[in-house]
Image (tube, rainbow, N blue to C red):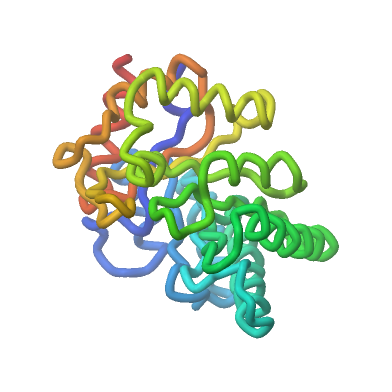
Length: 277
């Protein structure tokens, strides 16, 4: 199995990029010999149609696969109609512009429990995402929305929640953030636990769940309430060698996006480790 089955890249442009544009980031990914990049729309979607067209052309030319991270300011469990509407609009914009860039996967942080029960939060988020995926389909926007597993206990996004949404709604697939899964409870950090996670992906979503994966990996510092901050892989206690072993064992395909403070160094190190297994 080659790393073409599992693509490795960075969340945002590599740190060694000359310039700050997405286009220079894509070119740098190619120079480094990496495979993919996540466009960070986290502070808002600030790219127009012309810019997106240029990004698409560059990505096609350089053979770099793209995905998008939607803005952070999203809560699909908001009690305020205005905030809910603004959240849906931000995801819609990320999907619309992302698809023009050739990025099909749109990663998002779905929301917070606030004062709701977990069940009620799930129902609210599910309803909002059904509405949005329907709109994207109606408009012919090629986008898969990927709710991310989250690292703080106040946030919606356990493995169960994300897999249940993905099984229930067409156009939804998970983004498995392994440092978040680990930080949330301080567990999910051994070969047996990684294989359990991948088995559950397959149980809920079938073979497609494993052949179309989207993953975030980083080191992480965490406390009793979950995630505090990202660390480099070697600074952290994340058992990434065993994670790579489990992904190889399950013949996982898709993308591994590095979000550590040393983006491309950790992406290259992880891919090398994966290829040597």
